[in-house]
Amino acid sequence: MSHVLVVDDEPAICWGFRELLRSEGHDVTIAASAEEALQLAPKCKPDTILLDVRLPGMDGLSVLKQLQGSSDNAPVVVMTAFGDLQTAVRAVEEGAFDYLTKPFELDGATAVVRRALAHRHALSSPQRHEADTDRSMTDAELAQTIVGSSAAMQAVFRQIAFVAQSDAPVLIIGESGTGKELVARAIHRHSLRSREPFMPVSLAAMNPATVESELFGHVKEAFSGATADRRGILELVGEGSLLLDEIGDVSVGLQLKLLRTIEHHEITPVGSAVPRRCGFRVLAATSRDLGSLIADGLFREDLYFRLSVVKIDLPPLRNRPDDIPDLARHFLSQMSGKPGGDAGGGALSATALLELCQRPWPGNVRELRNAVEHAAIMARGGTIEVAHLPPADSTATRAASTSELLQREISRWATERLLPLDSADSEASLYEDLLQLVEPPLLHAALAQCRNNRAATARLLGLHRATLRQKLRKYDVTGEGDELPLH
Image 1 (cartoon, rainbow, N blue to C red):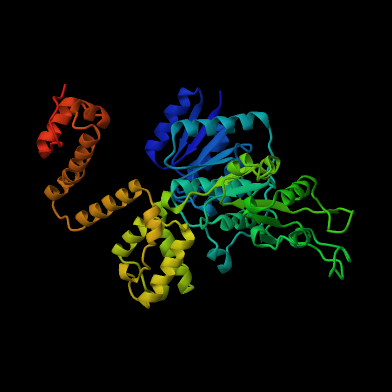
Image 2 (cartoon, rainbow, N blue to C red):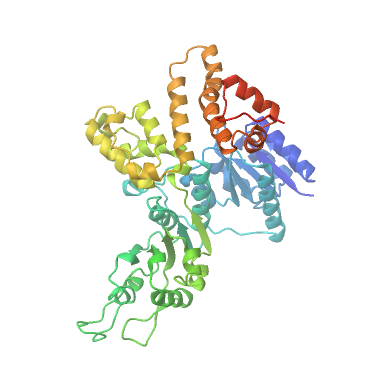
């Protein structure tokens, strides 16, 4: 039987974990603060610890190492509802076994506890070797901050934090403008190679005739114009991190040479037969579907598996609209040169922020940044209104799916209706008002599709026939042509 120490100031979470873990056959001790946990840990000798970050008094991360020391290095699972990349990285650097973001599924939390206990039992006295590196962020690094608090970005932060501690190749996948290079830079900045160079290489932008020389270097007289030996990019990066951007656009021939370099940690300059040792870490990024390229014979499957030891999928901005307000404010603060401040004294109005949240952003975060910068310039230090924003891309609007457009219009309608509400009676009618707007056209379309056969219409809509009859009567909806009996 194992013993679990739960450190959280929320009684509901403590109760939930107590019931869950006891049902799994574990003993459970509860602490409502870091100070209480430090007193209890030496007595109860936990096999694993669930530790919240935000606690009254000392925060969880500040006492993580102390708790490990007083519990014979029990694995610690950090929990937080306010996680960002810095929190995730710091948790891993302090020695956290895993990282949970609230709210979490109980099954997922149980699986993490099981892994932590298995790790504890497998290693009777695990040793942690942490780098004593100063992680304070410079202004330049702050400009490269990855902003987001959505569940999708929390998952990305967690992956960055864990993969930064290893040398495994990482494949970063995402649409153009989602921040693939920012993720690569974050992995490098929080790794043990952070004092070494970080070198992004846009392979698609290189001249095909000279790309091999640029990457691998060449020796004197290797080709016409090679008047001296020249080191290539792969050698210049040294022990740092190399980002191979848009790896999906690389020719098959160059893919093979890159595969050999990554597998054997050697480079051979053009014109030479003597390989040279290289020790860089490889990160790769692509906005293309590599699976389709592999199926079409345009990308080597062995290179794909070599690069994707860890895969990080970046969500498009349209899938994380909750992050748009924070991103917009972040870009404004960057323009002012004062983190957390307004751009030239300006700020986003509620209607401008709503407009930003409702656009599809096919160019993702990059497009949003450009729009905010444009608006800040046009507002000239004043409050940014919708009129200051650049026009929405009509091409992008047409490309957006009908469902997305419908969702945005409903959101806009609801927001406009909610803003002036000052009575419970008005608020109570909002849902009914929406149904009166959307149900009649839906019923008309379904009836037309089924040629006014109401039984077929009920099946198509997934409604009981009596429910359909009531709705048709309510909205006085009739189809064209003869009415068929509903039976």
